[in-house]
Amino acid sequence: TIFDRSLYGNNGTIYGASWVMQGGLWVLSFDGTDDYVERTATPITDYPCTLVAWVNSTASAIQKALGLYASAADNLLSIGLHSNGQARWDAFNGATQTAGAFGPDCRNAYHLIGCVFVSATERIPYVDGIAYEISVANVPFPAVNTISVGRKASLTKEKYLTGQAGVELITNTILSAGWHQNFYAQTRHLFGV
Image 1 (cartoon, helix red, strand yellow):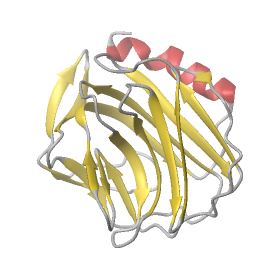
Image 2: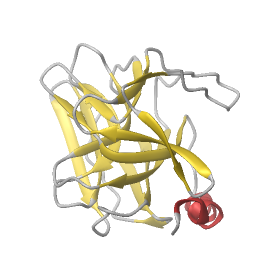
Image 3: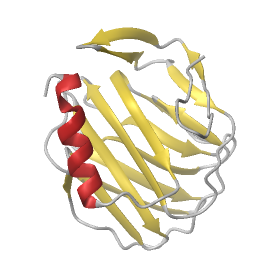
Image 4: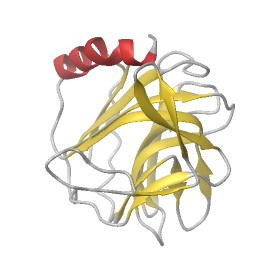
């Protein structure tokens, strides 16, 4: 079990992932095949929503680091890495899907990846505290029932994270540009950045 140290108590179950020491911090290591952490329940049912995670991946394929999913449908909000190494966000509500790749190549080193899903028509992605292009494509909030780290599970396919993830955050608030900059500045030393 992995424990949620926030007020929400969204504890999760670890499937295959292992703890490794990064600096003075324990993070989870994922094999890219079948390792993940999951909690079947989410307190977030509408916009706004912010996802943030420190991620270090070595793969050249789409990687899912953190997300809200539906266990039996193609519904999700997630962050991770694109096949070109850039950070990536996804919003998928049944037949309506939009995604974006942004920022520098984030492979082979720790990067703080985040996305503020402001509304059905606005998403603000971040890498290492820097905001990138805002998306305005319309995606109503998907019906989701699971929080997952290291895995995208959907009706049509699964994608797993190859690498490590630590200090994941999901909140039903809009975390400002200043918050992202400050969080990056205050936690980067933990990940050797």
